[in-house]
Image 1 (tube, rainbow, N blue to C red):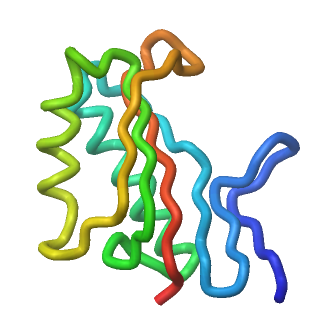
Image 2: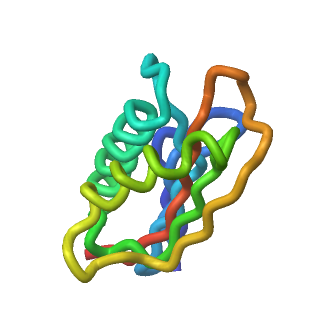
Image 3: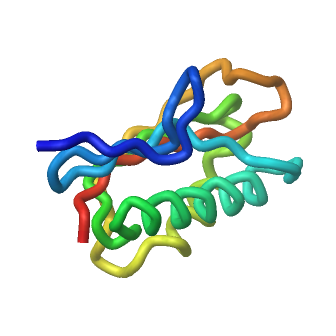
Length: 116
């Protein structure tokens, strides 16, 4: 089986496919300042990378969500996440608090999906 990399640089790839699996690196937001806005931005990036790799959100297998402050931002993130998912298509999910790469990043999400 071949490995294909998308949006790569010297440190990482935005997505990697292997067989029928798609692995996305952790996606972070751009300009939004609150958790809801950052979650929406990250999910839009995920939509784009999944499409480029031959998948979509309905084929998600697993998601890991990192929040810089889970007590403050969980409800806002979860509301946007729930609206984004298609009915009856929820992946397995882990949500945890972590110190993220930059102080302004409140949400980072990584996913694994099956190709369509």
